[in-house]
Amino acid sequence: MVQQAAGRRRALRWLSAGAVASAAPMALVACGGGGDDAGTSSSTSVSTSTSTSSGSCSVIPSETAGPYPGDGTNSNSSGVVNVLTLSDIVRSDIRSSVGGLSGTAAGVPLTVTLKLVNTASSCASLAGYAIYLWHCTNDGNYSLYSSGFTSQNYLRGVQVTDSNGEVSFTTIFPGCYSGRWPHMHFEVYPSLAVATSGSNDVKTSQLAMPAAACNQVYGVASGYSASVANFAATALSTDNVFSDTSGATQLPTVTGDVTNGFAATLTVGIAA
Image 1: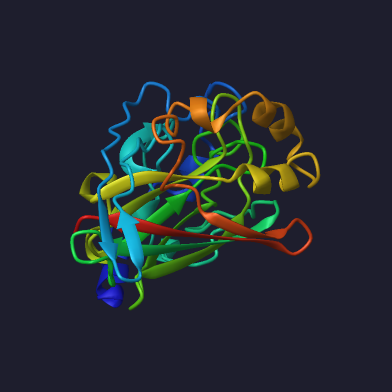
Image 2: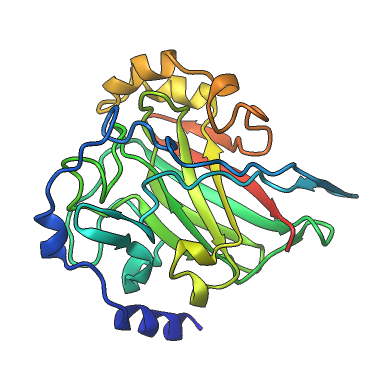
């Protein structure tokens, strides 16, 4: 199925690297990526829980994809933006640009592992689903959209859940831009074959980075200087996405340090 999907993706047209590289810078608010969810409604669901002898799992809230999804549902200055149609977007290391574009995002290494489970079936692992993850750079900008970053598509990638329902991405710790708690976006698709447009997903949500990990990175690691003041001016309890639940089911467990990098893990529950 992966080979068929790869062939399908190659057949689809993508904005050429030249067209993207020549795109005029976009006027975006705050920190290049700021205002991430402004003007886009958030459809937060009420979480339901399923208890088992080994624990419990909850439906993760549905959240806005924001204005920078790059999943074919909106445009930048060059037209519709859709990295999901790129044959090489299916990858575990998302730090470099693909599809003829070049560039690698700098930042503290971070491995993100998501475990997809079915809350409607005793928290059973969901294998064969596709998860698209994307987030901002260490200085709060989004590839393909932010001024100066339209010729990059890094920090975006797709993985297919294994027999344990897990996917793992190698990326960088995201920066904090004005108006939002540090976060990552993701979309869940029932299969790789339909992971070609954001309109086909079965869940859109976000990860909230834990404060303890943010405090280890911001003000310590190079490239995150803008995050210091932005992080000090925000709170999880007042964030326009996480304030309803304070990220109860969206806070991953994060271990590690700036020198050796971090690892984040989160169980993502959906009613499949």
